[in-house]
Image (cartoon, rainbow, N blue to C red; front, side, top):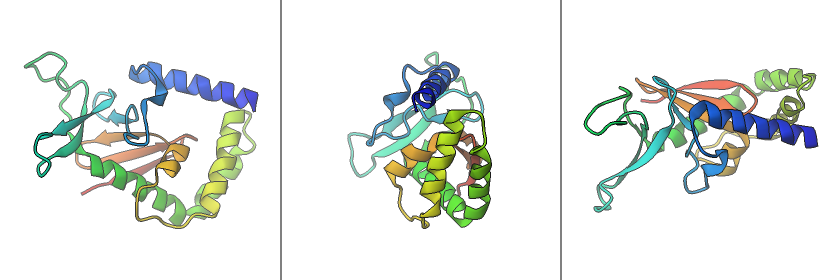
Length: 175
């Protein structure tokens, strides 16, 4: 267990270095996507923005690449913003894909049980337990999200890739 924890700490450290964030634990129950939404164009982190925050009727939470406006008045990254609700939908869709294809994913994770990497074995065992008893969901579940997802990469055109903590990726198309 100690070695698996050390490998997880190393994974988190590498993630923070790769995406230029201060700490991995910045995501919270109220803001679960903080530091976990990646731009498919430039690989920078997306940041949460609130539009029309003074008028509750028009208030809208979006996510935009943090490299979009590095210098005031000059456009950087060309990616488009994405609505907060789309990220929740992407997780629900990815989870349901795993549930619908249980046999494939469980077989994949059983193969990982033979891996030399203790963290991969631990995650495979955890994922097998979660998916074996799982049923499709209709609403976002924050505990499932934190147990399964490493990041969501956003590409233009409504294409998202949900990357799981074991290295598996599930592609989603959002209309």
